[in-house]
Length: 166
Image (cartoon, rainbow, N blue to C red; front, top):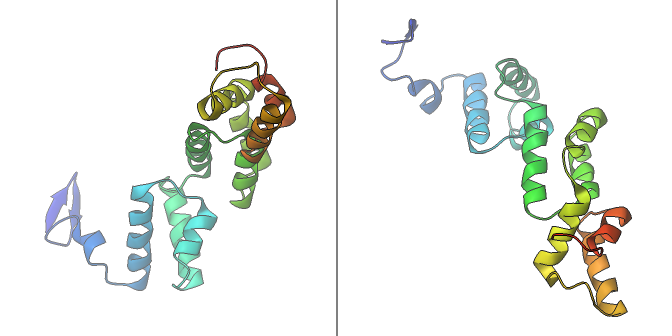
């Protein structure tokens, strides 16, 4: 028996709870914790990864993880947006992907308001094609398509071709 912060745990080591779970619920819970230890997940995404297990127990595990704040939709959305912005993706792409994970629109709009999409479009364009603004119509069309495919709206694309820091 191990005493850990005034809690008595009936096992040799505290990690035994995760390392060798006994019930089906504990197995699902331990698996979910391993996924969450690697990165944030949306509840829908985590449920899909745990899918081979019993659906009732998955819902119970997700509820417990949410209650314990291990699974947090707001934290997931912020982390996901930050990751995609860092890789040069635009607002439309990020919003669409967050909606697929059932993130509420109000939360999406709050997170999207934190970024300067025009500056990010300039940075993405400069990173791929350089900061040169005096280019041919064909090059401009190519760069515009690149930004659109990355999920930037037309206003951000237009701003990417105006003078300013990349």
